[in-house]
Image 1 (tube, each protein chain N blue to C red):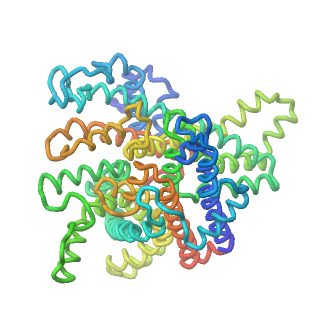
Image 2: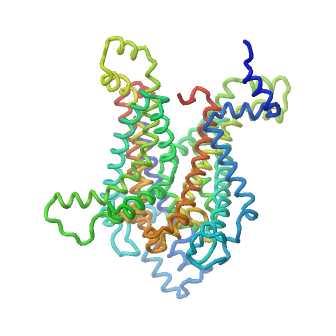
Length: 322
Length: 298
């Protein structure tokens, strides 16, 4: 566990350093074009150029810039958005809750569905239902999320007109009570969350199904059955328990995949989360914001992985030894 | 055991199916064979694209936004280019990026994994920590940042993918190198006077060959996913009309989803991406079984 913690810190440092170095290494920074003699938008006036460099701190030695960047980032200063002229931290704070709402609700829904369908399919393996579920889950987890989302959008948003097409809430809506507000947010959340759930549920389903099938032939299952335990207890307390450790590990490790999926889905549904923010920033080449999103998503993913390791160690003492 | 008639008849009917192919099919299993067949179909379409495509996809061969007809089986896009031709030529782009990225990732993985496994010591530790860190980073945001800064030619994209995908391969190769060294039959063969070419062909390649194929397939699958995703986000190579970029352009047309145009403009590239990813992943599952029969799914 100690080594996992060290690895997380090391990775976090790597993220911060990449964030600092990549724009300085790679071409394409809007500021670099102004300072590069070969570029068409080179600033010929040396005084203006110097002032620009000094304003952004680019005239100082790289080590000093790095130290300044690190202290700034660690105290929550991630620079200002070029497009909106707002602190990046404020933008992130505004968009992060939406992404967390979408990701967490999809992860919860996919976990519930995966566990229920997976254990049922394992008990009826090789039945038509089981086979159909396996095929559907393989296909659903392979389709790109923006494609699945598009199909759902057309089906439920356009053809059936059951659900709103885009956004996180009705624009300019005034809510009479909390219930109306929750209903509006929920209606807007449903399609994006359903899309993400479909993308996530396949691998969870297969994992639970295979773990349960793996223990069906074990002696303790035979004993439990011989004791005359009702099938419900057999499934829940004996078969499913064995799937918990791999499932928990998978769940948190899957967070990275879920957040990645959410970024695409938010772009498609114009959901006001981090994905929408990164998409708009990419279009405007608003680098400080892209870097900020990279940093925050990295922290989320690293945190989820650490949580996975901690939970696995707590649930299964055998893994603590190595 | 008595051979029943249908068995004998089946054996007679396919006397020429080479044993190697039959064995491969048997060990790949149903998933692997389906994946291989699908991938083969895409490869053929990609290679023969100029012959198969009815028009040059860059040509303005029709009026804008034509509906499907005998002349344009999938209609035309908003500037009058033939959608079917775009789709066929698009296979090339996905496959080219996949091949470049997978090849690069596997080469890098072989290099780093081989060095770490052979050298051992502090170099091994340092390289493996690097692998750990790289595998912990979230790839999509990193890719978005890098492609936004670097600009996205197809070659650059393949290089960036390769630079991101090698750690998994390196870890597997290192483990295999360590196990080869521990078992010592390579050292023994060398002590009997076997040359380096013989050892490579007889001992090393059979041990890591399947791992290389598996690494190629999984890296290719991820490359297809990410290429489509980046193109969809508008970060792809704007001069190479890939399937993801087709979808991006289609969605840029206001109100596209409100007409039935998405049926022939949006659905086909989406299905193609899905099928190609599915093919590579199914082949990956088949190869996994082939590598380790114990993993075979119940």
